Amino acid sequence: MTPSGIGRRAALALLPAPLLLTRARAALPDRPLRLVLGFPPGSGPDVVGRILAEGLREAVPAGVVVDNKPGAAGAIAAQEVARAAPADGTALLFGEVGQLAMAPSTYARLPYDPARDFAPVAQVAAADFAFVVPTTVAANNLADYVTWAKAAPQVFMGTFGAGTPGHFGAAILANEAGFPIEAVHFRATGDAMTAILNGNVQGMFGTVALVAPHVKAGKLKALAVTGPARSPLLPEVPTTTELGRPSLAFDAWFGLVAPAATPAPTLSSLDEAVGRALAAPALRSKMEEAGFRAAPRNREAFGAHMRAETTRWADVVKKTGFRAIE
Image (cartoon, rainbow, N blue to C red; front, top):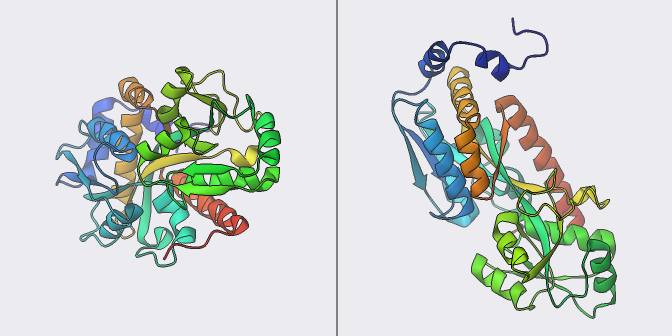
């Protein structure tokens, strides 16, 4: 029986390392694990996915490979893993909030169902956003920005694509504060950054890692961060919750899911392997250096989080009047 007050992972950590590894490996596949990513090499999900893969190699004797399957906002990769056979844990989706929680509400024809087709393995990491404005905007805090936006003839908000967290963050801010916006969707990150640096758009939610160098160089102003705590990359910038706007507390999270029919012992062994990898200080440091924070959740907690996030984003999509992408 697990000691009172000690979680499953904490209790497992009390076991001798060789015994723990033997137990965990017993239910792991005897073939290499394939982490399928729906985004290209060098993208944010790819960077954090490869850091995880490196951390898992010690716990997975058969090895770990990263398989990039970009396209259709991650739907191609998700569909491939959903249909993978046999469902033995060798094909895993390294997915993110868009694929696993937002897509059911933002796409009219989704070729997979996150709730039906996947079994959660573990949440791995998260990336927080910062709301930034060009230096030409006469606002040094979020309250000033709202005042400025209400008086402006038109406010253009840059996004990294329709139906993304940053897009809905802009919509939530505008709806709650009471000013209209025109969303400008960019497919390329570089194009979006050029637009806001040049003042062609007057606001944008970008990941902290992406915008922090420009803020520190004095080329952009950061008015808020969306994470649960201030970012070490922008420690002087308050969180949206501190500023009285908890509805703007959101992040881009990443985690592993397996085909729904994967055996429970295999899921548990994979979960334990991920937990041990994320406990390593060196791995956490690599994530932080890349602009992510380790955000571990075991498979039960991750499953609950996926369900809660799916409900939350469905409500946001409905309130913003977003039209589902065909």
